[in-house]
Amino acid sequence: MANNRGKEVVDDEEYHSQPAPKASKWIFQKWRRQPKETSENASSSTPILNVEPVHRKLDDDFWGTLLGYRCNGQLWPMHIEGWVTRMMHFRDARLRTNGPSGLRWTILPPEFRDILILKESKFAAIYDNGTHELYPPWWEVDYIYIPLCIRNVGDWYLVRINLQTMELVQYWPNKGYIKDYRSLIHFPTMDVLPIKFDWLLDEIQYWRKYDGVFIDKRDRHLKVHNVNDDYAPKDGGDLGGDTSVLACMLMQHVVQNKNLNVDDDFKNKCMKYRRYMADQYYNWRFIPRG
Image (cartoon, rainbow, N blue to C red; front, side, top):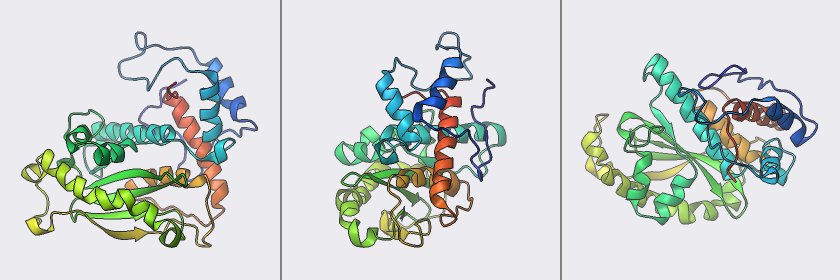
């Protein structure tokens, strides 16, 4: 199989992939045909993600959930983390090929929220001070994207922080959130995040290294007041497990300034995107961790 790392292997608008009547039939047949690789004999230019012995039950549940056949199709944090990793490798490949133009963004894994809120800010600094090879330092980006989960209901949404204006926008997948879930979203995440975020900027000495538009010290605080529901179904319908798929779609479309139509048979589009994600995980050797 050709190495597709860092490349868009399918048409983003169609998400072409093979149909899968069962969660395991397609992916396991492909996996059995694939020669086994180890870190010793794999090319250094083709790193393997999370290659560890995997229990068949975990493997089956992982792919079954991804393809929408199990757990109501609600993706796990592991799925979301894998998509973040895929997007950041895509960014790195584009950066090496075309330079930094259009790549002043970073996407952080879901665990970033927990590390930042529940621990000291210094433990979250690895994602934003340039010491982690996958994540650029924040003074080299304008936008930060973070996928977040509403744990009580299992829904996912995406937030974007504009470092030029210090504004946080929440991309909600359901127009009913403002009435039903607002308190769950704001406590503790949106109530605590601005304070912790300010501390983190001080921890990495962001304002000393920042060379963007001048921001008065009085305005150097994260503001959480914008909600964007442009990507929620216009009929107000519940996406169910597809809220997690929508969050992954937004990671790809919003950072690349691509349009995303959520009203044209969106459930079917989500299924195509699930298969597209499965293809990408397979091509990138993303294996669930046991």
